[in-house]
Amino acid sequence: MSANAKSTVTVLGLGAMGSAIAERLRRTGHTTTVWNRTAAKTRPHVEAGSAAAPTVADAVRASDLVLVVLLDHASVREHLDPVAAELRGRTVVNLVTTTPNQARETAAWAAEEGIAYVDGAIMATPDMIGGPGSRLLYSGDEAAYTSARSALETLGTADFEGADAGLASLKDMALLSALDLMFSGYVQAIAMMRTVGVPAVETAREVQAWLEPMLSYGPGLAAIIDGGTYDTGGQSVDFSRAGQASLITASREQGISAALLEPHKKLLDELAATGRGDSDWLRIVDLLTISK
Ligand code: NDP
Image (cartoon, rainbow, N blue to C red):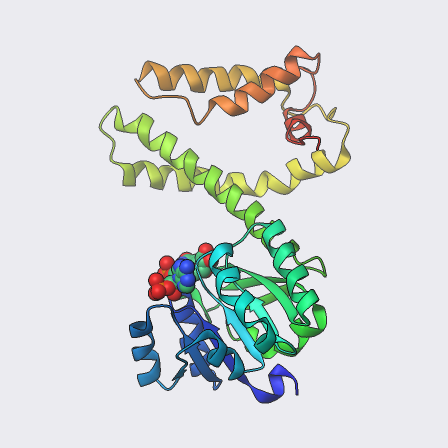
């Protein structure tokens, strides 16, 4: 029987995210069984209509579809490995944040054990689950994804990235990298403006107003990278180096470290030192590839 047909779902892990997921599944009419290492956290879920299982094995046996919302890769393997026999023939959707290779490793283990495995990445916070802005990425066993899809779609927009189980995680890590670097930029601007008494919240508003229209340039910049010639006459390495040098000097003059800015300048310097000062500055993308 498919996971959809039975419409019962087990949720392993009732932290902030697992709880939001279990609640959403209940609200959308799914019969849910929950398990959590700290058993007391199952209480509100039981009061709301879920069944609580005393062990992972019991939880797994309750449903054809098992959603894993533990902390990290280590906790996933710690709790799934011992119940491989119970998981056989069932679908596991692992929503835990992992690296692509950790996802592939778990997928390889699942394949050996006869477990249908889908790796997921949650592009949302717990309060967004089930709401319009919630998006989840999936990769791995497509047939298993299809069978679980109607339950998964209750959590947010569901996008299947491909059969390589690491793909959802890779996109998750890439998008989070962009987010991290962007918010590091907020912190740099805030630190600089605090030196003249401007509150962080005020600078954050300024940064947002500045970045919102700037973001629309992203696809154009990406097209230069896809073109691969770096001779479009856009902002050059040498031009960018001068700009970056000013940012670094201005920070230091205000008594603020330039540690967040320096790596970018270092890459530009490397291009200039190897005779590529006239290239589009986006050529730094080539320096990010580390040969294995
Ligand atoms: P929480 O810290 O709120 O909850 C962690 C959960 O993992 C708890 O149920 C905890 O159990 C359990 N846990 C931790 N270590 C172990 C272990 N060794 N064995 C068994 N259970 C363990 O985290 P979240 O719920 O927020 O996050 C869960 C996953 O979702 C993470 O991988 C996170 O990266 C991902 N995620 C979270 C987002 C968010 O905004 N919160 C956004 C996107 C992804 P116990 O109650 O016993 O401590």
